[in-house]
Image (cartoon, rainbow, N blue to C red):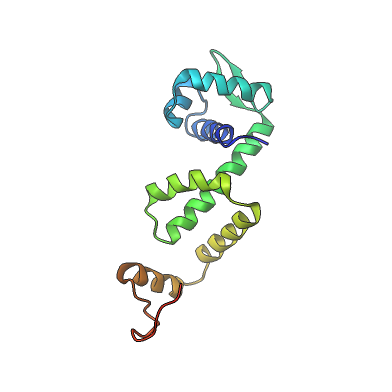
Length: 153
């Protein structure tokens, strides 16, 4: 079992590598908003666990096991972010919240969120209920409920 911090490093290394083709200590530090000595310390730990290969002048490379974990974390992040965007959370906030939630949610919850996201994104027409939700977010009133009826939470 890895710590949240270790998962963040693996995901960060994956994202940098996908963008640049390689990951250096400096790149990881900038991406994660930490100091280079902290990156070296964590990379050494991940190296000892067999999740990355680190050579001082060649940078950091994910092992197959490290890449599998990083892809899993990235998938959880992307699914949660997509869900939050569907419910009208601004992209920047959705990205930040997904970073927190990706580590905390039960696997079953994440799977159901993924199912909902796939269902919504693959609906043949823009779902009517999603339009109603947008109206509700803008007005605070459910467009399908008469004003004389109380709305329940």
